[in-house]
Image (cartoon, rainbow, N blue to C red):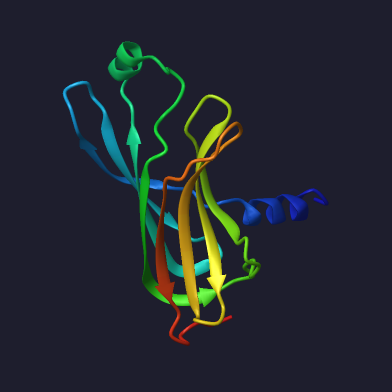
Length: 151
């Protein structure tokens, strides 16, 4: 049973799991815009919705670049219940809340939470990470705390 405690700690530190809540077809080849709900694992009462492009097999075959989806994404985060702030990273670099691979090896879509302590606001940034070159495509959403947070 000694292994159980480290396992529970590792699982509680893992990024959030997303749930697909919408899928909109955008063309005849089967390309879709996917919308996922992502509850913040360390801030009870906050849910983010991320939209991103999902390439179809037909698009991959006809246009090449088989193993990669575009970096475009959008995010909206809202208070969906009473706010309880867990042990979050309060450094300027923030903390990863969610990550999804968008290529075979090197590229991912990420959601990072940054705490603006002075203004009492949680900032959620969606962006792409790429091993070889960065992307300027990003989107942010904020959730004001208004002093309603329990620790």
